[in-house]
Image (tube, rainbow, N blue to C red; front, top):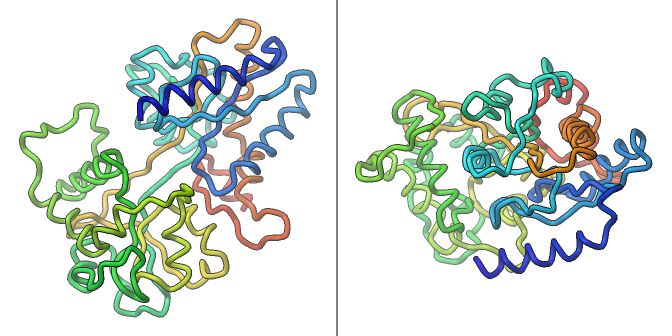
Length: 343
């Protein structure tokens, strides 16, 4: 992993040096969206209308692989890294007067962009673990917690990576630590029936047996080979495609996974769920827009403007709608109210 990160950083730096940085902003979008190319096109179109003399170069950067590349000017990252990125000096504080149409942003999403009293990012996209079942599966129609789901489905009956029709739960638990850690913290909220921002993490010397048992149920329902599988082509939505093909009885993933289901998205029921037996305590992860604190003064105001464009109603509505020739939208959750009204 370290070697890969070094190679990626080296390649990104060499590629970026080929551009005239006096007239170019280096920007990295969040890579795990259904159609990153459309996202880039919408951002570029809006930007060129306002600043035809300033180029945008879209760099390849992944917040899960490495820290922000020093060559980046504006970048989108998973909000779970906000406190560490801010503490380590990767983020420029954003004055409140630089936020355009602030009242249109969900307050909880904006509040999550603060660290030690200062605003270090702007909220763009929201993610939440959602439970998918089929409309014709009456037995699962009212299920909204993992305990009830396991009582109905039980353990996987086969060992193949791809489950049979109406068998088990499709869920990605393939990463070494990150996903399982976030699920555990989410399960603790549902167990304690109280939201917490985890500014202080719980001690690992006293892990919750109840939360661990319920997360183990996901592993049992999914089967070891399936939950730990990651495709060679890095298809983030491979399990959503399997579910659309009739594989698995339930699926757990983000909202944008429906973009991979095509017309079958019309035949699913999707809802938030609890990792315990009690009611669900809602939890959204946020993808945020940050600015490099080492950015030159000549670019700083442009960077503030670009950050606002990245979270604008025009851009977020445009990328959420179906691509040309398609009936399938991107099913993105955004941090801006007006996008939902426009859609």
